[in-house]
Length: 62
Image 1 (cartoon, rainbow, N blue to C red):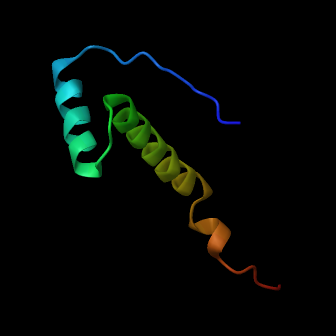
Image 2 (spheres, rainbow, N blue to C red):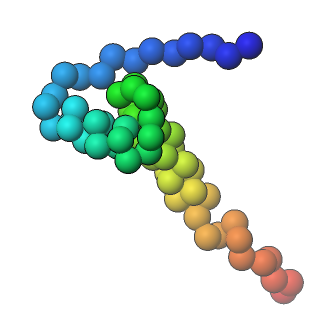
């Protein structure tokens, strides 16, 4: 069963313009969806960075 989450977004003109641009570019219906899209994108990028390339290198034998 999906849960509904709601976050208060500060009322800032520049933020509103950015969210509106993202909404149009990504074909989203609401500003909230645009904010969620950006948040999830940032979380994916940060998760990728936190693991780093160390995890992808083979472990050598001594």
